[in-house]
Length: 273
View 1 (cartoon, rainbow, N blue to C red):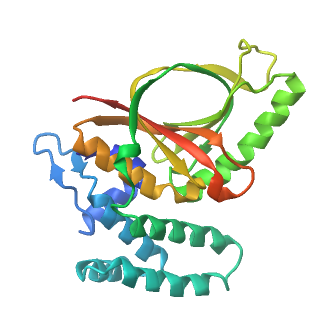
View 2 (cartoon, one colour):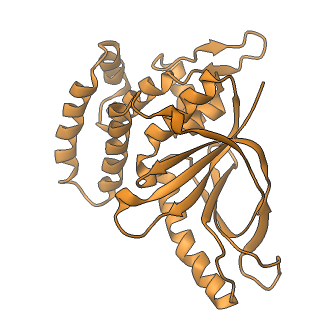
């Protein structure tokens, strides 16, 4: 099982929203520790979360969402509902296009439920890595908040490195840390081999090694990462591991050419309980 924080990370929603969904009876935790009150969730509950978020983004009220979920709407029926809403969204202002992408990503995750091969998951140690990075704060770990924050960080970082004469020696690596409330520190980095210096207008830091990490290669843009996270969650739970913190994103091939060919390795720190 996963703590409410880890389940929120894997489902790409806020802890606050999970508590609200519990309070209104839409997504109660699988288990509540009677002594501590801590909530715990299972990987299978990501399927209900996917449907809940997709239906909410369709414009349904939470009461309406509850009715649809209780009727056990099929993936095909939900596909039709989302397709209809997509036609409406395209008539709205540019800001709504971001919502559309999130709906489509959740839809693809629902369509691929159980289809992601977990034998692609590799457990391995991750060595320390020296990176140059810039940091900014996002309102939450949801894609609607992460994307607008991380996307401008990389061109800004590369411009600063060029001015400083610092070369990239490896892949881009994005890391995340919890901040106040649901906020998340977004850290956009690239591998370098220089020493830290106060003369740089960016950080040079060493990412700590991970003794053991569950890793999987995600293909395509990160907007479509939900199904990959769901596969990792199921594998972690099935093999009796505990997950710690946010995933590292190692951009093996990203941002150039056809987005369908983009390749990112997700690295999630795991331990035995």
